[in-house]
Image 1 (spheres, rainbow, N blue to C red):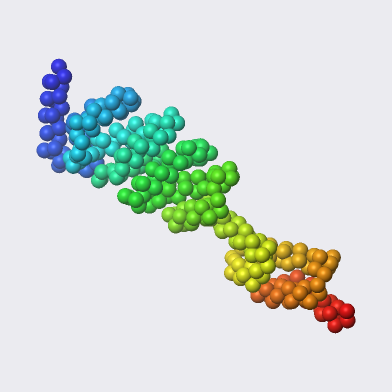
Image 2 (image 1 turned 180 degrees about the vertical axis):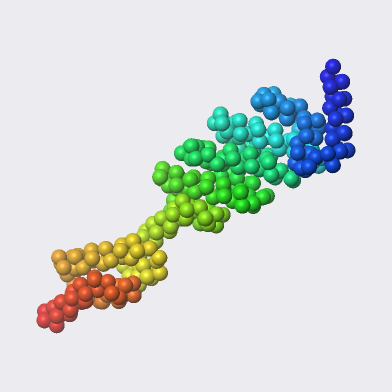
Length: 301
């Protein structure tokens, strides 16, 4: 009968608790005890892929145990049930349910390297990196896991999912420039060895600098623009600066700046800025020639 089976489970549970030395691994000790602990029925159902029944038993257990149990076997069992059920929900695209179950499993009990590996393996799946909802759950859960266990393994997976989420959102136009840059800075700090993350971070930095360069140049803030180009580590930023310079020269030459005096001072500032950025650039000569022409026109109106 159920009472007899419950009694046997209690006996085995007590036996396991009293024979720690029989287990060479502490996590195996917790896993074995969890199966015969009060949370064992839910764990057994989850292990046999009866997830709905497992969640019902889990909910019943929690309803009768309002305070968080400090028993390590129960803690381990609860985490295991939530991870198994949460990953099943994730596979079925039940993202809200998956996110709640998996974050409720955190922080993982100690020791729980096996549980951590199982959780990380579930999120280290390149074939899911084009699913924004899946990535959203992944980033959220691994971010929470990182708060409690900032291990190298967690950092590696966190970097990967964060990078792919940022790239996907950027391609969809769903993330602004500043947030993209912040996300990639975080990703690279987690795992500097991740080549894709570093490349994406560099691209984000370069795009941000080019945007800032265009903003300052269009507002006539030449000295500020030159500082951006001079301090940049990207050749494309310098090239963009001189593309703008060439555009200004062309506008002057076709007469879009009729006032020679104000144009002369603007081109003088342009030359000064260009010399700050790259004194050997071929455009320097073109600016100097234009400046001489403007000076001559002013002297001989």
